[in-house]
Image (cartoon, rainbow, N blue to C red; front, side, top):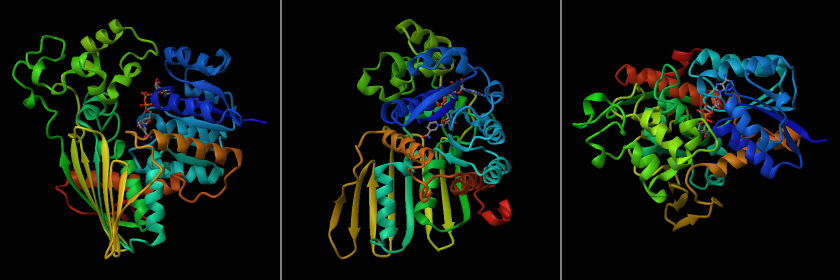
Length: 425
Ligand SMILES: NC(=O)c1ccc[n+]([C@@H]2O[C@H](COP(=O)([O-])OP(=O)(O)OC[C@H]3O[C@@H](n4cnc5c(N)ncnc54)[C@H](O)[C@@H]3O)[C@@H](O)[C@H]2O)c1
């Protein structure tokens, strides 16, 4: 018999995962029930997956009132709702749950969920999708093989992309640390998770510097208006002009935000007029200098690990392209990753290009696909070994480091000793 999965939160992430289940796993798994607080989302998405109206719910309360209706559950709502919904899922009795990152911006909440999952015997997997990609799995394998010796340092940069930063962390869903989470957690808990996974040693202390440098009203160019299409006189030379980014730029130049039409309007099918109206008067049409954002647009985090190694993470909101760079230095050699290209240099030997099997496309779609495959395997009992799986136990450290980096940054960069700050975990 097929296993069943329900989904709460039918936005970009939830529907992507549903698409992968339908495309790659429909012999073993079928979608069961859907929940979203927007009727439009249910109306748009349910028919594509053949889910009848009676299995669509407009609130998590209504959904959980049905008891356990499926073998697995995907929770892909926005950050601030993860804690409440996951707690309800565990208390209702769901045993295999895939939860979007970040778990929560509150330490007590993610520790409570970790403990509750353990008490209930549930498997709570966090969507740190990068770990599942061929590229990062290959790096982990090389490190574990001892080929580059013991790790001495990691220097990792997440180049967010200027257009992506403006879309998500200025105009969009994650601009405010109080209503969402700090950008170092929202954007980079993945990267921190990778660093901690590669290090395989407890993190001892963290320090951080950074801030909101650019997207402030005092940096607005002369003639800027609240909305880009509201008569702005600075549009021509502004790389953040929403009209260009979302409407008039040719497709090749518009990077990934041309795929974000549903985010702009809330609807699956959009006319040109819908998009123009969304940019004229909606959140994504606002001048980037006049938004209510407060999250850092650049931040560096330094980490020290128990094995003596150190790591630096650089979150950079201002790159032309979206890509990650990683330089991993060991006692016998080094790995240099640029985007999805990987070079290995063994000291005294030759530099080699490592074929990672990564398709080399931008973003992390490959990791997303493999994350869903991993979830399906666990759900179907085809895999029981949890090595390298991003369970909540394994993910606590990424969240602790992110939160500690904020404490450090807000205190002038003083080092935060994790054990002292968070106490015994
Ligand atoms: N793993 C990754 O690589 C990755 C990438 C981007 C975003 N994310 C995370 O995924 C999550 C979802 O992001 P997204 O871009 O899909 O967002 P989204 O806004 O596109 O989708 C969220 C959906 O949840 C619905 N929703 C909101 N509150 C709800 C509630 N209480 N109950 C039921 N439905 C609710 C919304 O109506 C919306 O349809 C976020 O937490 C985000 O940080 C993860």
